[in-house]
Amino acid sequence: MLKRKSKNIVIDTSIASSAGGPDAKKPQSTSCRDFLIAVKDICHKIVWTPEISSEWKKHRSNFAQTWLTQMAGKKKIIYCNNVENEELRNRVAETGLSEKKIEAMLKDILLIEAALVTDKIVTARDDTVRELFRGISNKVGELKDIVWVNPCNEDEQVIEWLEAGARSDKQITL
Image (cartoon, helix red, strand yellow):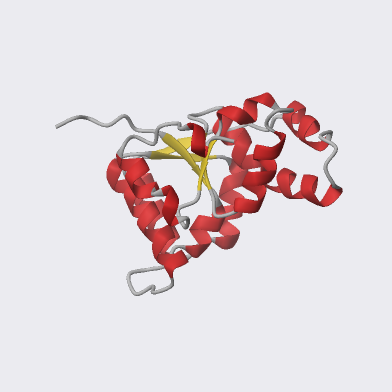
């Protein structure tokens, strides 16, 4: 059997808050739950910063809390401190977009910062902010290398992508 290379994946609280338990019926809840299970079962790891931890504590579902405990027990959490990148934040703020769009990006910049110091993978349900980041990637070059997937988008086939090694693909990079 081929050994898969484990990837370090940043998982936004939007997934943690939506992940439903075994009785969940809503597609969003089941997609997020199945994604988290796949991350754990396929042997990928999660990237954990103090800022991400703080967000998860406020918004995670009961299922996500249990899952996180299992991930910690399997030593599948990559702890990163001091990932804030002031230069990146300034360049995003100076892109000339509206204040509302910049504010939305700066709210989620913690995901990008964590991804940049690990395997450059972000998973989140927010397609709007993903498109904002994609739209400025020509001005903020390091964004181009970030893979951003949404487990709720069926056409992205995120579980299959995880099983295949969570590789970078032009279609899913910013």
